[in-house]
Length: 309
Ligand SMILES: Nc1nc2c(ncn2[C@@H]2O[C@H](COP(=O)(O)OP(=O)(O)O)[C@@H](O)[C@H]2O)c(=O)[nH]1
Ligand SMILES: [Mg+2]
Image (tube, rainbow, N blue to C red; front, side, top):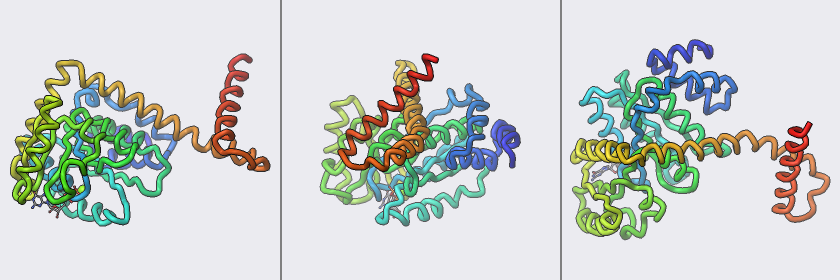
């Protein structure tokens, strides 16, 4: 499939073209820009991006799978972007996710894509943002981003979402201390999944204090039995409506755009910086931080000189 076919295919809502388009972006292919600038902005603006985050084992993938089911029940075409932490600890997760998503594998109105964090040099936020837009332009609405909320790049990714649910479950850690402060910060809804297990009510009570202080709510779900899932979907879509009316959604989207632009710029600078560092290889003595600053200053000066010509 060449770039013209991919562009036409995405506009036609072809899942194959969407998948190829996202691969172009992920592989850093220069033709990706042609695709990204051709996308239907109206569809992108309209698409609701839902974030599902929380610690490993909380039931995010199971919940996401059931959210897909709930959306399909309403006739919605849905995209899922699963960010895989690919750590040795959770290395099996991606396989598990694929198996779970198999029940929707033959559904042409469900698009599931995983993006690995392993083996890449940053730029995940940039790729994820582009992935969301390609899915949106390919007619997906909503789009769910599932991610474990650890590390800066994951936090940047979750901020691509319009509305975020923080999923926790009893038996994961001792209590809410196990949830990262940053995650509590970005959460619009707190979900206590595995409500069938002992300790769920206690966890919900603990979380409700944090939630109330922010004017937010706690929802109970049993993802494995599809309980509370349609309520969660409705709750998230409600928050979207509210925050769209208040201007919060456009504020979030503007911020996410800035972060994404910076992420792309860093991606583009990385090889330039690497080369600049190697060029000064003869002179490796001295403090790396000082050297880094000199390289950056050197690049900025070069730019000044170019501009004044
Ligand atoms: N008892 C119970 N188990 C669940 C529930 N939701 C998910 N699980 C199980 O918890 C494990 C982790 O779920 P998974 O969706 O992979 O969690 P993730 O790491 O957050 O994506 C799996 O074995 C699920 O079957 C639930 O509501 N109740
Ligand atoms: Mg998972």
